Image (cartoon, rainbow, N blue to C red; front, side, top):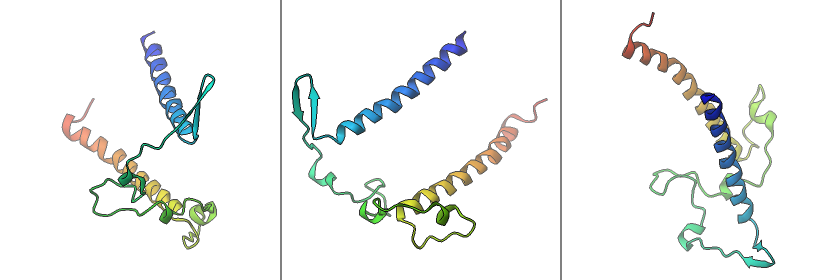
Length: 129
C-alpha cells in the first residue's frame, strides 16, 4: 500500500511540474490576460540588461554559445543529414548541431556511469555474496 501512495505522489508531482511550466509559457505569449470580465495588459518587466540574448550559458562563463540569432532557431533541420549513415553538417542549423552534441555527450556520460558506478561500488563495498 505504501509503494502505491509513493508512486501516486511521484506521478502527480511530475504532472504538476509539467503542466505548471506549460501554463507559464502560454501566459507569457499573450499581451493581455483575461481575468473574469477584465482584460489585464501584460507588461514586460524584464530589466534592460537582460533583454538582450547574449548567450545561453551562465553570466560568468568564459566561452558563450552566441546569440539566439546565431543558433538559427527559425530554420528547420533535416534529420537524415544529422542522424543518417553519412553525416552532412554543412546545411544543418546551429541549434540542431548543439542538440546533437548534447545527445552524444549524454550518451558518453551514461556509458561511463554504467561502467564506473559498479566498479566504484565494488571498490567501496567489496564483493557481495
